Image (cartoon, rainbow, N blue to C red; front, side):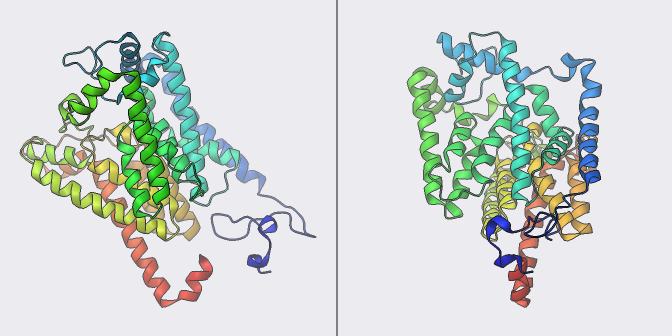
Amino acid sequence: MNTRQLPALVRPPVTLAGRAAPGRMPGGSRPGPARWVRVATMLAGLAALTAYLLPRLTTPGTHWPLWDVRVYWWGGHQATQGGALYAPGARYSFTYPPFAAALFGAAGRAPEGVLAAVITAASIAALAVLCALSLGAAGVRRRPETVFAVTALALLTWPVVYTLRLGEVNLIVAALVGSDLLRRHDGHWAQGIAVGLAAGIKLTPLIFVAYLLVTRRARAAATAAAAFAATVVLGALLLPSPSRVFWLDGVFYDQNRIGDPANLSDQSLSGAVARLAGGLDPGYRWWAIAALLTGLTGIAVAAWAHQRGRRLAGVTCCAVTGLLISPFSWTHHWVWAVPLLVALAATAWRRRSAACGLAALAAAAAFSERIPLSWPGHPPGLVRLLGGDLYVLCGLAVLAGTALTLIAARAEAAENPAAFGARR
């Protein structure tokens, strides 16, 4: 039977392996997926959830101190009370735009625990949404047990662990971007709004505006830019004085308010250069060159992946590029490791590829909490230097591996266009 000739509503769904999945066909039976596969998937999710919760429930205050929630609550309180939000020597260093402070201000009059509960619940929901979106973009059927298992397994990655530990908003921001770019709704009038809102909360998603432009989605890019501009205007209307300080006095690019780039937790190119040179100032020129080359190459690879129909790879490569070229990318910012792992695992299963499977295992190990980052020392040793830049090296490997995969696919298509077109 040629399923390409069937109407869309009666075509059998496609599994990871690319073959027609069992389903009810006209005049046929409906065997459905094997029950044991569903049970095994659910059990794997329960095992991962138990592994995450069991060592933490006994001492929740130690494992979930939610330090950054205090900063958010303080920023919201300052916003509602008219206090100085970005003053030097303030109790906390609030590094987010005024629009974010206005959002946190909604909980500024409530106890800090309320904001902690809201951010934690929203982050867990955002993780589930991000996993579901990634599975869909990877071509995996989003059955409830599959989404549950992948979400539970994602709880074992260090970026997710530390985001929930700090009470950070990284998962919420990533889910906003994913809801805009991982769904197949190109050309929809609302595409770009969520990216703009995410950038209004945290500036780093602005790289996705450039991604929309180079992938020829100018309308969505304009919508994202307009939505971001709206957050700036709204922040200025609600908090005029902090907005003037943040945007006009240069607080938004003041790296000294964020931390030391040589810190091991800064897994960006600037952090790698700072650790190698003993500080960012001596190696600033090298960082600028590396960031420029990586940014241009990364966006080009992401756009190429999108044009070849690999939506998940394109969005993930763009996110990785942003993490690499940002002045600061703390380990908990790397929550985009979750879509990356989904993409690698799905590709390994679909192609029955040992190489992709090994890449997935290597990435899972790199982003787990089992491999600690190592301080390179002075002078830095090669092995310890590489160990201290583990996320950076993984990000560069993702961009290089994606580019090589696309080159190989193009060569294969040139040699056998008929077979390649059939697979697509």
